[in-house]
Length: 76
Image 1 (cartoon, rainbow, N blue to C red):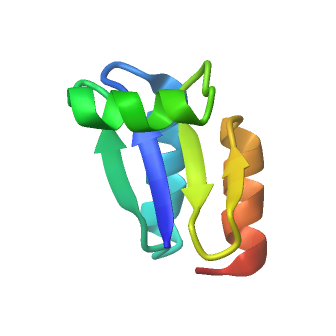
Image 2: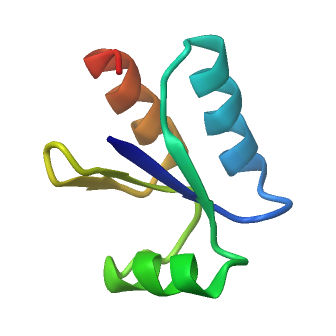
């Protein structure tokens, strides 16, 4: 399962969400304005948004272009 941590007013978050939508990539969005989600992403030592976690392979990625490349390659 792909979990995409995002924040409001983030052009890079919007970019990833747009590509995921266009390619019908399924994911769960977790906006860090929710304190529980913020704590979760902080546990990964994430410093920027978006931040993606692939729970099936225990992979974490913190750059929007890398997230898009990863998701596109594995065609979720």
